Image 1: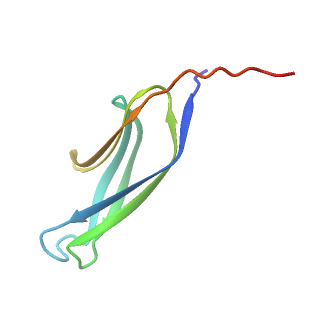
Image 2: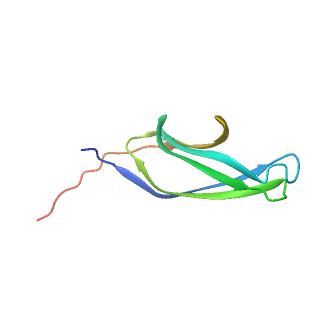
Image 3: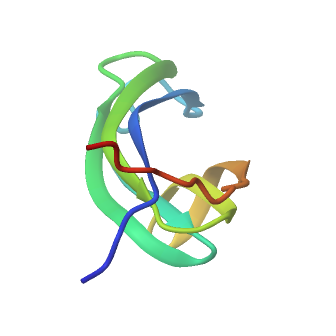
Length: 102
C-alpha cells in the first residue's frame, strides 16, 4: 500500500509561444511533463493551435497531482525531446500527526 501525503488539486500553466512566420505551422504538437525529483508523474501530448498568427498562448489546467515526498516539482513543455518551457517549484512536506477521536 502506498500513501500520498499531499495532493495538488489543480495547477494552471500559462505560456506564450511564437513562430517566425504567420501560418508556418497552424497546429504544433507538444509534450507536457510533470516530475517530482526526476520521477515522472504526468506525461501528456497536447496540440497548440496558432491559426494564422505568429504568437499564441495556451492555458493548461492539470488536476490531481500526487505529492509523495518533498523535493523539486517540475512542469515542462517540449517538442521532439527538446524542453522549451520549464517551471520548478520546491516542495517541503512536514510530517503531520493525525489523532483519532472516539
